[in-house]
Length: 199
Image (cartoon, rainbow, N blue to C red; front, side):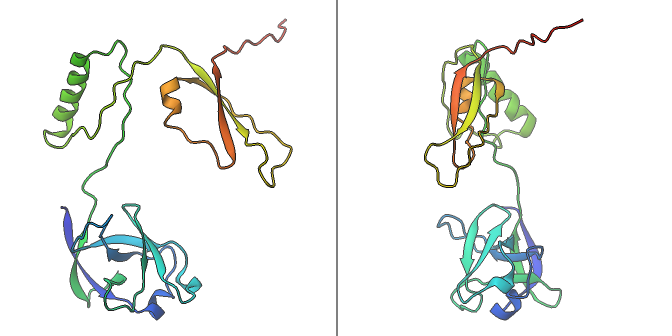
């Protein structure tokens, strides 16, 4: 792990209530039940003054949201950088996790292995790993993707929104999400023909 030692002090609930969204804090780096004996950089999800007796909510730089009661001695609490404080270990980002969907024209096992080998050469052996692999035959067609409101949605106005994304391959649609209250409509791709008369 990429850990950095930082001088910091633990804040009381009263001190946390004076913090804003822009203030850098440190909270427990524990994630998904995995106990990590260090802290992670974070920020409050809403100003501390909105604290109403419940727990404070912080989001770490690793996009993990946690609830904290600063005055609870059984919790790791909320910390802020302070040269006069004690030394804590802070977990820093050591890399980026990419979820990739690769389209390989006329893909074969050999071409996939060549892609994997090239990535390992570029970033280093042991760095690039295959977490899961799904090989799907992709028809060489394109579709038009529309977004329209879901019927019966409360508060829906009569104005229809119709967004078209051209040249989308069917497999890419699986990785897109419609707006809240809207659904996707997929139709065969039609070339846009401009029949405006010209002089």
